[in-house]
Every structure is written in structure tokens, then in C-alpha cells.
Image (cartoon, chains in turn purple, green):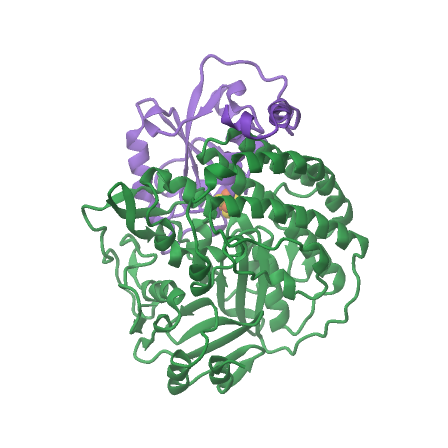
Length: 161
Length: 479
Ligand code: SF4
């Protein structure tokens, strides 16, 4: 309310209305899903490129919820863990902590080349070389970085949608 | 010339801006009377310790030998050198004598396979100090950043005190991987150093390589790099504004920033390049087939009509960022914080201003001295305005010759680029065409040293907003 009183209410109102007009992605055909899949995102020591693209996907330029996904801030609410980054040795503990906090039935998705096998960074004294060094990577989305559209398509494919 | 500059230049000149000092000269540099030159970076390996300083707007580098795995600590004079000293200890096991800090590990979390992994005498792993019990921890996954960075601190009367930063989570050992490669082979690594600098890191690196080889990129390449840098600046500023806005519940501003950033990415993709301009910069110019003029025009057309609304929304929500994470002008000077954060705190460093062929009249933004989240956001928008103006100015005279002479080939070079988040510097030394030594300096590093001072007094729950407003990138800090 205070926002409207202090400044030009019309321009802010226009900004509300414009928010969907400016959307760059074409997502008009997306159907509404009742069986939402909750995503928790974890960056583990890459260049942050994949993490930033996931961030874009979760932002308002894409209507993630219309495709049946939502991002959650607590791993306890998550169905899928989206991992980005080359998995530095120091991040393994964080991965364990987050994975253990997720409820049963959870899935692990490697987003980007680094998360699968370390990508351009490989493995070394500081990195283990992606999730592959820890477990069999069954679900992955390739790219360096994959675009938000690629990530969304990958998620849909993994969800069988 | 300052006394410190004179002492450095009394050493043996080994490259265009690099002087090799003996132990006495090194000591004299650290104790030189008069002003302290701003420190850009400090690093060491088993053989030498280096400082990269700024003299006016030109780099000046000094180095000296490491004796018995020890050297006289640059941090005794340059407070921001402490981070580099700690990194050198973690990687090489070389010790800074008389260092200003408490010698906490910088990168080594105690989980590496070896201690001092790059040293000729590595030790067994798992020996680093563990976190002090009783301190409040903001775990990496809750920091609000896009990369892993952990903070620990005390809470006194509800406010944050005595912050320490755990940045090693993001360390990948990238620089070490570059050793022995040709610059062309190393470029894919540089191109993924940190996502806020997909263009700026390779440009700085390629400028350093060109200097080492005695080459001067021609005006066409220079202008293409400048345009790519400006497109990246707009996109990253929008990302940082959106993330900060989300942290203070300014959803409408965040929405418009996200849409604008996506529109830039979309314009890039439509012009046949990657959304975030990855892998376009090459050592000798740019990727074959890149049509820079239509790309620039498409980005300007996508961005220009959004500016008025972004400006309006930014001013509406600015009060929410007032007083957030203040970096005072004194701190900015002392820790040589550059980039947007420095400019919002009264430090005017912008390495674009020293570049040959720069259309200076487009850079109108004058910075601020408020140093808080609101000042940084307002400046981001001013810089986007300037980027649009600069791109249009370049398009008006693209490839304009300025007869910049090629430097002498010394196999050593220093290159810089003003990335969205600040000045990025590379130093390379080549031997038989391969990289013998390399150092990169991301602007996040200068922020790291002063972070405890900036965050002191913040509410614990306000830390993610503060970190986002500073646009700290863990991948840039730790590499
Ligand atoms: S896959 Fe590529 S973009 Fe993603 S984190 Fe790794 S290097 Fe960065």
C-alpha cells in the first residue's frame, strides 16, 4: 500500500500488468498440473553458470508451476534434488546433509556437464568430478550451461510428461 | 612517482610492468613512506611471492623469491593481501611472516587428499582447522548466493559480529589445471571461471596473452570485445538486481529485471550465439561467424524500451535497501574494492576508462558514496544506461583505428577487463608457447577481505540480502 502512496500509482500498476507482457518465453500452452514436483537446487562448486540458469527458470520469466514444478527453500519439502557444479570435495558433506534432509521417494538430478562428471573441471585435488564419483547418475540434463528451456524440457522428460 | 612506486622500479624489470625485487627491496617496498598503492592481488607459489598493484590506472607488479618456504608478508602493508597469503599456504605450504591475519585456512577445508597439494612436499590430507564450536553458522545452501559460501559469526544483541568466511567449498583448482597448456587450450577453463564473467574473464586473459606475445588486438576485435562486455554487464546487473530484490520482497522489481535479462538472452540466441555469450572470445579475436553489429542492435532494441519502467521500480523499492551492507569509502579505499561495489562507495576505479579506443563520453555514471544496497542498485541501473549508450557509440564508429602500438614480446603479460562485478586481472607467463605460470584476480576477492566489516551489525536473517546486494560470487573467490 505504501508503495502506491509514495510514487506514481499508475506506473506501478502498469508494471504489474506489463509483467506478463514482457515475458520472453512462450509458455502459453502449458497445462495446469495437480501433481506438483518440488525441486531443491544445490550448487556444488562449478562456475555457477548452471545455477544461474536454474535461477532464471525458477524466476518469473518462466512459469515453472504451470509445468508442474515448484522450487522449495527447504530440502524437507523437496521431491527432487537438482545438483549443479563439479562437486568440490568440500561440498560432499553439504550434499549429504541436504540429501538426508529430504523425505523418502526422493530423486537426484544432475544439471549440466559438471554435475555429471566434473565437466571442464574434471577431478583433482579439490574436486571429485561430479556426482558420478559418488553414485550412478541416472537422471541428468546435459549442457554447459543448459538453457532454462533445456532444463525445463529435461525435467519434463524425467517426469514422463 | 610515489615512494613505493620508486622502490619497485628500482628492481630488475622482467616484463612490461613487472619488477623483480631482492629481499631488501621487498622489505623497503613494504615499509616505503608515503601512500600505499592499491593492491589488486597477492599470490605466491613455492618459488616467488607477487603483488599486483595499481599505479594511477596502470598495473605495477613486484615479486621476490620465497626463501625456505617463507616470505615477508605483503599484508603487513596491504591488508587485502591476507587472502592471497592464506591461499598460498593452503596450496603450497609457503608461509607469510608478519601476516596481519590469524592464519585461518582460506581454501583447505580439511577434506583434500593432501595438504599443500601443489607443493613439491605435500602432506597427508585432513589437517586443516575445524570450525570453532559455539559460533552461529550460515550454511552454504542458505547463504542466498548462487555458489557455495559459508559464514560463521557471533550474534551479539541480535546483530552479527566477528564474521568469518569459508570460501573453500567453491575451489576447483582451475589455475593449476592451466599450467602446461597453450593459451588456446586453457581458454575453455578461463571461459568457465565464473558465470558473471563468461565474457570478461576470457577478455582479460586474452589481453594478457596478447601482451605476452607482443600483439595488440586490432580495433575490430577491441570493439567486438567491448560490445560483448557491455551486453554481459547489463545481463549480470539485471541478475544481481533481481536476486537482491527477491531477498527484500520486491517481487515486482525482480520480475521486470528477470524479464529484461531473459529478453537479452533471447536476443542473443536469435542472433545465433549462446544466451550468455559463452565461448565467443578467442585469443586472436572472436568466434568465426559472430555478427557483432546485428547482435548489438538486437540487444539494444530488447533493452531500451524497458529502462523507464525499471528506473521507476528501482526508485520505488530503493528504501528497502537503504543502509543494507554498507561499505564505507574508507574501507573501499583501504581494501582497494573496485567494480560496481567500489564505485557505489566513492572509489572511481573503472578499468574501461584506461582502454584504448574507449568512447569515454558514454560513461556518464558518477558513482555514489553512500555505499549501501540502494546505492549499488541505483548504480547498476545507471551503468546499464551507460552500456546502452556505449554500445550505440561503438556501433557509430566500429573498428575506428587508434594506432595503439604493439608491446614488446616478453612472454609475460597482464590483461584487465571491467566485468559486471568489477575489474578482472590476469597475469600469464609463457614458456615455449605454453603457460608456465598464471594468476587470475576476480573482483570478488577484494570484497572477501572486507566482508566481515561490511556484515558487522547486520541482522542474521538479513545476511542473504546483504550478500546478494554485494553480488559476491564464490566461484570467483575460490576458483
Ligand atoms: S556445466 Fe558448464 S556452466 Fe555448468 S557449472 Fe559446469 S562449467 Fe559452469
